[in-house]
Amino acid sequence: MATVKEHYDTHLGNFYSWMMGDMTNRQDEFQNFLIEHELLPRITRNAIDLGSGHGIQTVPLAKVGYSVKSLDFNIRLLNELTANTKGMNVEICQADIREINRFYGFNPELIVCCGDTLLHLDNKQDIEQLLHGIANILVESGKLLLTFRDYSVPLTGNNRFIPVKSDEDRILTCVLDYEADFINVTDLLYEKNTDGWGQKISFYRKVRIKPDEIVKIIERNNMTVQYNQTVNKMITIIACKKYSRPA
Image (cartoon, rainbow, N blue to C red; front, top):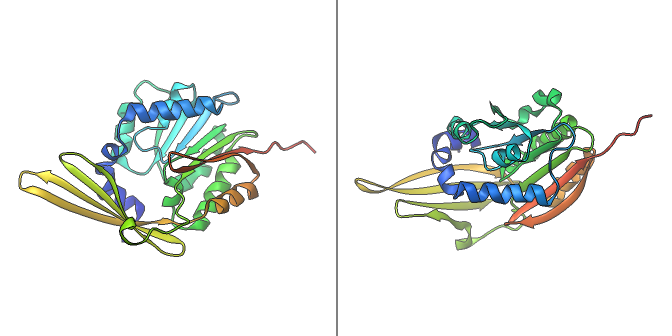
Protein backbone atom coordinates (compact mmCIF):
# COMPACT_ATOMS: atom_id res chain seq x y z
CA MET A 1 0.00 0.00 0.00
CA ALA A 2 1.35 3.40 -1.00
CA THR A 3 1.69 6.24 1.46
CA VAL A 4 -0.46 9.28 0.71
CA LYS A 5 2.58 11.15 -0.60
CA GLU A 6 3.56 8.23 -2.85
CA HIS A 7 -0.02 8.01 -4.11
CA TYR A 8 -0.01 11.69 -5.08
CA ASP A 9 3.53 11.64 -6.49
CA THR A 10 3.01 8.61 -8.71
CA HIS A 11 -0.70 8.70 -9.46
CA LEU A 12 -3.24 11.26 -8.26
CA GLY A 13 -1.05 14.35 -8.62
CA ASN A 14 -0.86 13.67 -12.37
CA PHE A 15 -4.59 14.26 -12.88
CA TYR A 16 -5.73 15.99 -9.67
CA SER A 17 -6.50 19.30 -11.38
CA TRP A 18 -8.62 17.52 -14.01
CA MET A 19 -10.45 15.63 -11.27
CA MET A 20 -11.29 18.82 -9.34
CA GLY A 21 -13.01 20.42 -12.32
CA ASP A 22 -13.43 24.06 -13.27
CA MET A 23 -10.84 26.05 -11.32
CA THR A 24 -12.56 29.42 -11.63
CA ASN A 25 -15.90 28.14 -10.34
CA ARG A 26 -14.29 26.37 -7.39
CA GLN A 27 -12.30 29.48 -6.46
CA ASP A 28 -15.35 31.74 -6.76
CA GLU A 29 -17.34 29.38 -4.56
CA PHE A 30 -14.63 29.43 -1.88
CA GLN A 31 -14.22 33.21 -2.06
CA ASN A 32 -17.97 33.64 -1.60
CA PHE A 33 -17.81 31.36 1.45
CA LEU A 34 -15.05 33.50 2.98
CA ILE A 35 -17.09 36.64 2.45
CA GLU A 36 -20.40 35.13 3.63
CA HIS A 37 -18.84 33.89 6.87
CA GLU A 38 -16.72 37.00 7.45
CA LEU A 39 -13.43 35.14 7.23
CA LEU A 40 -11.68 38.23 5.94
CA PRO A 41 -8.35 39.77 7.02
CA ARG A 42 -8.69 41.97 10.10
CA ILE A 43 -5.83 41.25 12.56
CA THR A 44 -2.47 40.26 11.06
CA ARG A 45 -3.73 39.70 7.48
CA ASN A 46 -1.77 36.42 7.39
CA ALA A 47 -3.25 33.04 6.40
CA ILE A 48 -1.99 29.49 5.93
CA ASP A 49 -3.44 27.00 3.43
CA LEU A 50 -2.67 23.42 4.50
CA GLY A 51 -2.71 20.96 1.61
CA SER A 52 -3.03 23.79 -0.89
CA GLY A 53 -2.86 21.70 -4.07
CA HIS A 54 -3.07 23.87 -7.18
CA GLY A 55 -4.78 26.79 -5.46
CA ILE A 56 -8.54 26.39 -5.02
CA GLN A 57 -8.26 27.99 -1.57
CA THR A 58 -4.98 29.91 -1.90
CA VAL A 59 -6.06 32.13 -4.78
CA PRO A 60 -9.28 33.37 -3.08
CA LEU A 61 -7.39 33.94 0.17
CA ALA A 62 -4.92 36.16 -1.65
CA LYS A 63 -7.70 37.93 -3.56
CA VAL A 64 -9.51 38.96 -0.37
CA GLY A 65 -6.30 40.47 1.00
CA TYR A 66 -4.36 37.81 2.90
CA SER A 67 -0.64 37.21 2.78
CA VAL A 68 -0.70 33.43 2.27
CA LYS A 69 1.69 30.60 3.02
CA SER A 70 0.62 27.57 0.98
CA LEU A 71 1.82 24.13 2.08
CA ASP A 72 1.74 20.93 0.06
CA PHE A 73 4.06 17.97 -0.47
CA ASN A 74 3.40 17.37 -4.18
CA ILE A 75 5.80 19.24 -6.45
CA ARG A 76 3.60 18.95 -9.55
CA LEU A 77 0.67 20.63 -7.81
CA LEU A 78 2.96 23.26 -6.32
CA ASN A 79 4.28 24.04 -9.80
CA GLU A 80 0.68 24.54 -10.94
CA LEU A 81 0.08 26.70 -7.87
CA THR A 82 3.10 28.85 -8.76
CA ALA A 83 1.59 29.55 -12.17
CA ASN A 84 -1.89 30.14 -10.72
CA THR A 85 -0.68 32.68 -8.11
CA LYS A 86 1.73 34.70 -10.23
CA GLY A 87 1.84 38.27 -8.93
CA MET A 88 -0.09 37.43 -5.75
CA ASN A 89 1.07 37.73 -2.15
CA VAL A 90 1.67 33.98 -1.78
CA GLU A 91 4.65 32.03 -0.46
CA ILE A 92 4.72 28.44 -1.66
CA CYS A 93 6.20 25.85 0.70
CA GLN A 94 6.88 22.22 -0.16
CA ALA A 95 6.28 20.76 3.28
CA ASP A 96 4.39 18.22 5.33
CA ILE A 97 1.44 19.92 7.02
CA ARG A 98 2.50 18.26 10.28
CA GLU A 99 5.37 20.78 10.30
CA ILE A 100 2.86 23.51 11.19
CA ASN A 101 4.82 24.71 14.23
CA ARG A 102 7.58 25.93 11.87
CA PHE A 103 5.31 28.87 11.10
CA TYR A 104 4.69 30.07 14.65
CA GLY A 105 6.29 33.47 14.02
CA PHE A 106 4.07 34.08 10.97
CA ASN A 107 1.12 34.86 13.30
CA PRO A 108 -1.71 33.62 11.07
CA GLU A 109 -5.20 34.83 11.80
CA LEU A 110 -6.74 32.19 9.51
CA ILE A 111 -5.70 28.61 8.79
CA VAL A 112 -7.61 26.57 6.24
CA CYS A 113 -7.38 22.81 5.78
CA CYS A 114 -9.84 21.74 3.09
CA GLY A 115 -10.79 18.74 1.03
CA ASP A 116 -9.86 15.54 2.84
CA THR A 117 -6.39 16.82 3.74
CA LEU A 118 -6.95 16.19 7.46
CA LEU A 119 -7.84 12.54 6.84
CA HIS A 120 -4.66 12.00 4.81
CA LEU A 121 -2.61 11.91 8.01
CA ASP A 122 -1.40 8.58 9.37
CA ASN A 123 -3.72 8.17 12.35
CA LYS A 124 -5.95 9.93 14.87
CA GLN A 125 -2.92 10.89 16.96
CA ASP A 126 -1.52 12.80 13.97
CA ILE A 127 -4.86 14.60 13.60
CA GLU A 128 -4.83 15.62 17.25
CA GLN A 129 -1.23 16.83 17.02
CA LEU A 130 -1.99 18.87 13.91
CA LEU A 131 -5.01 20.53 15.49
CA HIS A 132 -2.94 21.23 18.60
CA GLY A 133 -0.28 22.85 16.41
CA ILE A 134 -2.89 24.94 14.60
CA ALA A 135 -4.25 26.23 17.91
CA ASN A 136 -0.71 26.95 19.04
CA ILE A 137 0.23 29.21 16.12
CA LEU A 138 -3.09 30.99 15.55
CA VAL A 139 -3.25 34.47 17.01
CA GLU A 140 -5.91 35.07 19.66
CA SER A 141 -9.37 35.23 18.07
CA GLY A 142 -7.85 33.65 14.93
CA LYS A 143 -9.97 31.20 12.93
CA LEU A 144 -9.64 27.66 11.63
CA LEU A 145 -11.64 26.59 8.57
CA LEU A 146 -11.72 22.81 8.26
CA THR A 147 -13.49 20.51 5.80
CA PHE A 148 -13.53 16.73 5.53
CA ARG A 149 -15.82 13.89 4.48
CA ASP A 150 -17.92 11.96 6.97
CA TYR A 151 -17.07 8.27 6.72
CA SER A 152 -18.98 7.29 9.87
CA VAL A 153 -21.42 5.03 8.01
CA PRO A 154 -19.60 2.46 5.85
CA LEU A 155 -20.60 1.91 2.25
CA THR A 156 -21.12 -1.73 1.34
CA GLY A 157 -21.51 -3.81 -1.80
CA ASN A 158 -21.74 -1.90 -5.07
CA ASN A 159 -22.08 1.38 -3.16
CA ARG A 160 -18.34 1.15 -2.43
CA PHE A 161 -17.66 2.03 -6.08
CA ILE A 162 -17.79 5.83 -6.53
CA PRO A 163 -17.80 7.30 -10.06
CA VAL A 164 -15.65 10.41 -9.64
CA LYS A 165 -15.29 11.93 -13.09
CA SER A 166 -15.18 10.96 -16.75
CA ASP A 167 -14.78 12.47 -20.18
CA GLU A 168 -13.99 11.11 -23.63
CA ASP A 169 -10.37 10.36 -22.67
CA ARG A 170 -10.48 9.50 -18.95
CA ILE A 171 -12.64 7.61 -16.47
CA LEU A 172 -11.91 7.79 -12.74
CA THR A 173 -13.57 5.48 -10.21
CA CYS A 174 -12.83 5.30 -6.48
CA VAL A 175 -13.37 2.14 -4.43
CA LEU A 176 -13.70 2.33 -0.63
CA ASP A 177 -13.02 -0.52 1.82
CA TYR A 178 -13.78 0.23 5.46
CA GLU A 179 -11.86 -0.80 8.56
CA ALA A 180 -12.47 0.30 12.16
CA ASP A 181 -10.11 3.31 12.10
CA PHE A 182 -9.15 3.54 8.42
CA ILE A 183 -10.54 3.48 4.90
CA ASN A 184 -8.61 1.80 2.13
CA VAL A 185 -9.01 3.92 -0.99
CA THR A 186 -8.36 2.53 -4.47
CA ASP A 187 -8.28 4.91 -7.43
CA LEU A 188 -8.97 3.24 -10.79
CA LEU A 189 -8.02 5.45 -13.73
CA TYR A 190 -8.73 4.49 -17.34
CA GLU A 191 -7.04 6.64 -19.99
CA LYS A 192 -7.41 6.47 -23.76
CA ASN A 193 -4.14 6.29 -25.68
CA THR A 194 -3.01 5.33 -29.18
CA ASP A 195 -3.41 1.63 -28.34
CA GLY A 196 -6.87 1.95 -26.80
CA TRP A 197 -7.72 2.18 -23.12
CA GLY A 198 -5.09 1.72 -20.41
CA GLN A 199 -5.65 1.17 -16.71
CA LYS A 200 -3.71 2.68 -13.80
CA ILE A 201 -4.36 1.65 -10.20
CA SER A 202 -3.12 3.07 -6.91
CA PHE A 203 -4.38 2.66 -3.38
CA TYR A 204 -3.71 4.27 -0.02
CA ARG A 205 -5.66 4.80 3.18
CA LYS A 206 -7.38 7.61 5.01
CA VAL A 207 -8.11 7.98 8.70
CA ARG A 208 -11.69 7.16 9.61
CA ILE A 209 -12.82 9.52 12.37
CA LYS A 210 -16.26 10.76 13.38
CA PRO A 211 -17.09 14.47 13.07
CA ASP A 212 -17.89 14.72 16.78
CA GLU A 213 -14.41 13.36 17.57
CA ILE A 214 -12.93 16.21 15.53
CA VAL A 215 -15.08 18.72 17.40
CA LYS A 216 -13.93 17.35 20.76
CA ILE A 217 -10.27 17.60 19.71
CA ILE A 218 -10.81 21.20 18.60
CA GLU A 219 -12.48 22.09 21.88
CA ARG A 220 -9.68 20.44 23.89
CA ASN A 221 -7.24 22.73 22.13
CA ASN A 222 -8.49 26.14 23.22
CA MET A 223 -10.82 26.68 20.27
CA THR A 224 -14.58 27.18 20.10
CA VAL A 225 -16.62 25.76 17.23
CA GLN A 226 -18.71 28.55 15.71
CA TYR A 227 -20.02 26.75 12.61
CA ASN A 228 -20.56 23.05 11.93
CA GLN A 229 -22.55 22.21 8.82
CA THR A 230 -22.44 19.97 5.76
CA VAL A 231 -21.56 22.00 2.66
CA ASN A 232 -21.35 20.26 -0.73
CA LYS A 233 -21.23 16.88 1.07
CA MET A 234 -18.27 18.01 3.20
CA ILE A 235 -18.34 18.53 6.96
CA THR A 236 -17.40 22.20 7.29
CA ILE A 237 -16.21 23.61 10.60
CA ILE A 238 -15.20 27.13 11.58
CA ALA A 239 -13.48 27.37 14.96
CA CYS A 240 -12.12 30.39 16.82
CA LYS A 241 -9.13 30.46 19.14
CA LYS A 242 -10.22 31.62 22.56
CA TYR A 243 -9.05 34.94 23.90
CA SER A 244 -6.72 34.60 26.89
CA ARG A 245 -7.48 37.20 29.52
CA PRO A 246 -4.41 38.64 31.21
CA ALA A 247 -3.87 37.43 34.79
